[in-house]
Amino acid sequence: MDKRISDAELDVMEVLWEAAEPLTAADVAERIDVSRGWSLATVKTMLSRLAAKGVISHREDGRRFLYSPAIQREAYVGKESRRFVERLFGGRLSPLVARLAEEDGLDDEDIAAIQALLKELKS
Image (cartoon, rainbow, N blue to C red; front, side, top):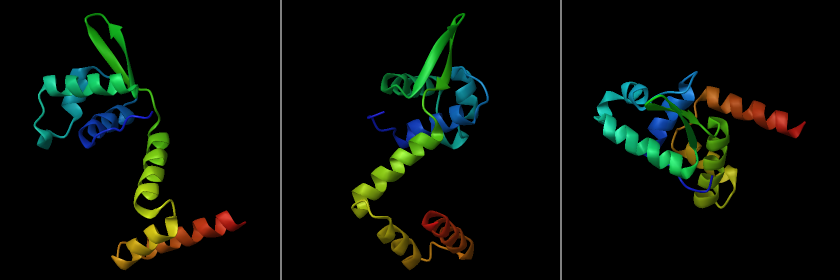
């Protein structure tokens, strides 16, 4: 997947990732946060964009389409995380962690998790 997913499209992807089965456009519209204020037509537009990008698939079911994610959430998060670190921190993680620590973005639980991860990576 080379094309980026916008924040709005990501909301649709989250609904599809959370679903245990393929969803219709109406199903997706019902599950989108109401604060978005989207109509069914808007959801259908988002689904069309995502299908064109190849990140969702669809199949006909009578007069409607059923939509499913074509990529795993973990794969997307991994790729976007790498892109973020590359773009803002030259591909190095330590400046990111340092920046989070400077902004009080790490609590004791975060620090313990990072320490455990580093210990695991060293062994």
